[in-house]
Amino acid sequence: MPFSAEFRCIAGCPGAFPLDQVIYRCPRCGDLLEVVHDLAALRERSAAEWKRLFAERWGTANADEPWGSGVWGKHEWVAPQLAQANIVSMREGATHLTPIPRFAADLGLGDVRVKQCGTSHSGSFKDLGMTVLVSMVKQMVANGQQLRAVACASTGDTSAALAAYAAAAQLRSVVILPRGKISTAQLVQPLAAGALVLAIDTDFDGCMRLVQELADKDGVYLANSMNSLRLEGQKTVAIELAQQLGWTVPDWIVIPGGNLGNVSALGAGFELLLALGLVTKRPRICVAQAAHASPLYASYQAGFAELVPVKAKTTLASAIQIGSPVSFKKAVRALRAFDGVVEIASEAELADASAHADRDGLFTCPHTGVALAALTKLAARGEVTRDHRVVVISTASGLKFADFKVGYHEARLTDVPSPRYRNVPVELPERYDAVRDALNRGLDAPATGVRD
Ligand SMILES: *Cc1c(COP(=O)(O)O)cnc(C)c1O
Ligand SMILES: [Zn+2]
Image 1: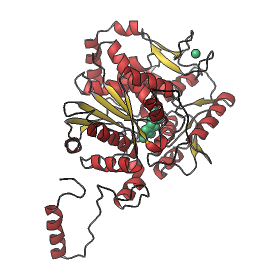
Image 2: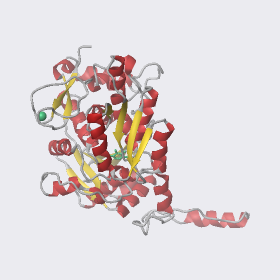
Image 3: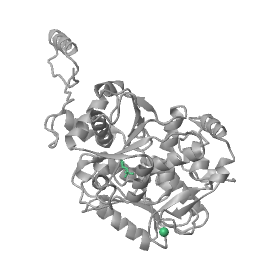
Image 4: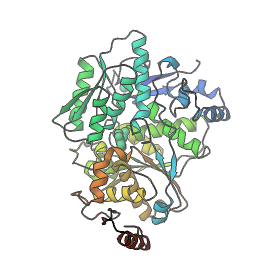
C-alpha cells in the first residue's frame, strides 16, 4: 500500500516512530505523540475519489470484510500499514445522526442532531479507538513482539471496549478501575469478557498513574488515549458526520470532555478532511465539562492558561470525572484551531438536559447530557442560533446508566431534587373504568415536564 503514517512528537521534536513500536511519549521531551499521515500520498487521490470510495464502503454487508465498519471504511486515513488480516472489528461506527426537533424547538434552535456514537458494540465511542489499538497489537504479536497483555485505567467505557476487543483478538487484558466509582453495567462488561479486573481504592487519576507505571516496567501495552493510536479511530467521527451531511460541516459541534482525547480526535479528523479538500469550512467546537470536573473550563476562562490539575468531585457523568486530563495540550490546540469554547453543566443541568433530549426518542447517557446542557446555555446566550446547524456528540448508550435514568425519574438523585422531565408509571387496579379515566386524563394533559 502506498499510504503510510507514523508517530511524531506534538511539540515538534525531530524523529518519527513506526506505529507498531511500543512508545507513548516523545523520548526527547516527554510530550505526547501523535499519528502523522503521509499527506502527499493521500493527495494522489482526489477528494471526489475519496468520497466515492467512502460512499461505496459505508455499511457494506460482507461479513468477512471490515469495510462496513465506520472506522475501517476509512482504513487508508486511519492505519494504512495495518494488514487486513489483523483487523479486529465489531462493525463499530457508521452510527446514526439523529435529529432532535422537539429539543431544538424548545431552545429556539433549528437543525440539531445527535451523533449516536454510543450505538456501538460495547455501548460507547471507545470502540472506535479500541478497534485500531487492538488490531495493531494483534499485528505486533503476529510479527513476533512479546507483549504480556493490553492494559488500561478506566472510568468504565474504555475497559469495556478494551476487554471486548482483546477477547475477540484472543489477547489478555487488564483493567484498572476506581473501586465503587463506575456503573454496574460498566464493571460487568470487562468481567464478562474475561479481563483481569483490578479495582483500586483511588480515583481515575490514581488508576492512570498506576497503569503508566505497569506499562513502563512490566511489559503490558498501554491502551489509554495517551496512546494516540486510539485517536486515529476516534477521528472517524468527524469524517462520518461530514459524509452524512453531504460533505458539509455543521456550524457547531458540542462534545463532552474528560481526558480530552475525543475532542483532540475530532479536531484531527476535521484537519485531515480540510487538508485533503473533502470539506472547506471549519466547524466551531464546544467542549462540555461537568462542573464537578472542569479543569479545561478553568484554563479556558483564563485564556487557555496552563492546566491546573484538580481533584475531580463526584459527578453523575462518571466517565468524565477526571481532574488531570492527559490530552489537555492536544485539546487546546483543537479548540484554538476551531474557534472553540468550553462550557460546564451542574448535576441538575446535565440530568435535565439528558431527560429533555430523551423526549425526542433518545436514551442519552449523563455525559451526552453534559453536552446537551452546554448547548442549552449557548442557545440561551444567543451564541448558537436558529440559523446554525448543530451536532451533539453522544458518547455512550443510556442503557449503561440505568441507575441514573431510574434515579432521575423516581426523583432519587441527591443533586437533582426536582427533575424537570420526570415521568412515572400510573399505578392502577385491574378495572376498565379506572384504566379508561387514567388514559383520558393522561392524554389530555401535556406530556409530563414538557414546557408550554
Ligand atoms: C471516555 C468518555 C468520555 C470522555 O472522552 P475523553 O476522550 O476522555 O474526553 C465521555 N463520555 C463517555 C461516555 C466516555 O466513555
Ligand atoms: Zn518532543
